[in-house]
Length: 323
Ligand SMILES: Nc1ncnc2c1ncn2[C@@H]1O[C@H](COP(=O)(O)OP(=O)(O)OP(=O)(O)O)[C@@H](O)[C@H]1O
Image (cartoon, rainbow, N blue to C red):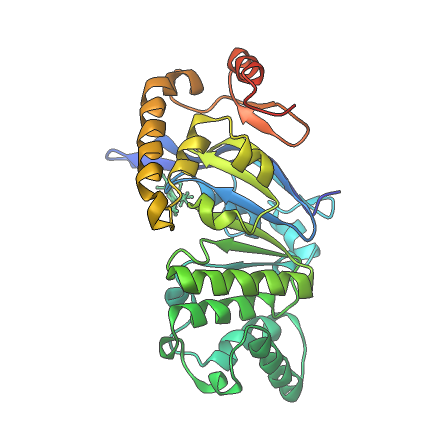
């Protein structure tokens, strides 16, 4: 059994209008997605802004009311509040956010911020609590004098470490990391990603790693789902997605990964323009009449792509995927 099994999840936000403020339409932020997260893995959820990634993450942590579908954890559907309570789900699943400044209470000292989940879920003495907070600071590479400081006294990278320390305080099974490094400089991104991996090894936790950037996800994730307009367009292992991408949207995201090597920039730009041109010419084949992704077709045991059957067959024959 997987750690988390998401099945046909839908989150639709009602749109109200008119004098009576009636529901006239809905935003289909998440529109029928399914994927599993295994214990100890980092699962990547990638897509452009507005594709529904954060809504998915908030649904998994229990912060968003779902329209339909299920999220199974230890054999129970945690979209139901009673199951979250009986499973102690809020203890086992934590979240870290992109904007570390607004997600950490500016009026609280770091000691209190990190201790908050301990106070909610564990019953420690004052001394035990302090010791645990100091251990957590040490794990994320911050000195003991951080205890008495406030969030604004730290850099973005340090604040993200504090967010991670708070998230791992109760030894959770899963952390939803929503764009955890997007607001950081490239060099600081690498540091934060490295200590997230270190913490994963030490605590054996799983991550649902949400990002708009396939470049960031490459070194973190074993399995990746590509999200577009509330639907999944491609699911696969890292090898499937980076070496044998099949959906035109995935190829576009791959071409958008920034090239850090200056000598390869011209070639990279030319390739990106070519991919954009192919996208414009061929996108009708990849989306239905409403402009939405088709249901996923399984290409190999690990690789599924949202394609009409005939196009899936054609691409297989063209050798785009290793069967
Ligand atoms: N509370 C809400 N009420 C109405 N619409 C919402 C709400 N929250 C999100 N949406 C809409 O749902 C869609 C998906 O939003 P979501 O934040 O999940 O996307 P995202 O992929 O995480 O994008 P970003 O990276 O920009 O946050 C968007 O069209 C957004 O405007």
